[in-house]
Length: 323
Image (cartoon, rainbow, N blue to C red; front, side, top):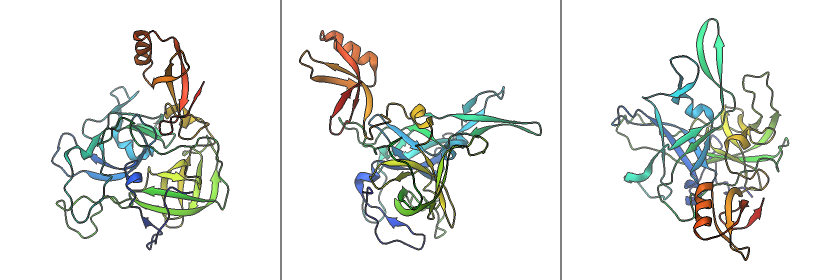
């Protein structure tokens, strides 16, 4: 099943999504100038959590303006006057609400793969080669179970024409619809859209946009970019990339190995499972697991435990498999 039941749709085919559980996993992304902190942030798009350790995914073009080439035009570096932040408010209310101090969540890291375009008639520039970007964003509310996340499917699902998918994202994020000016309340509302796949494009290294994608018969407005796209099993199978009047596109996780390279610890075979280091009692009981190998080794040494290995674990059900 899709993660939420589609309700009444508006003229753009969007339905409102008020599920707190989804809002804690799907975040609105804003751009701001750290050198001018009092300036109003700009709504960009959407990102979503993919594991318990603060990893989020968005579309590369959402964070593309963060980068520039260094003075030698060789390596990408971060610009000093642009940064991103997520607004992490999962609970809903009525009217205009004040934003809690810890609701603005800064980036603690980011990762992607990109290229460099060189031209004899223009300066070199950074090239989007994957349309995928990993952001590290700690949740506003810390929990012993880690960040809430959406299950990702790399390989089990393959698209077929006519199949329905669902996209979620912050359509029209913080647009000034009524000309209220810079002092208006910040608006970030989560919407969903269901559409049928009308075209499937595989990886093509001769295209500028070489990544695999599906074209969907739906209008995914600005602000939904970077949001999750679900199959009917409720697994995330791609990321919202572009939206037009007649159709929209989503970059796929299946059909290439780039997601496995950049998404970190996700088990590519079992949605909702993650690779970790585990240490066991002599009885075979799992005592502790985590992603810091040195921490696990020190824990085992301090307790005289010798049974250690990589495991694949579901942090919600605590089911695991030794690797």
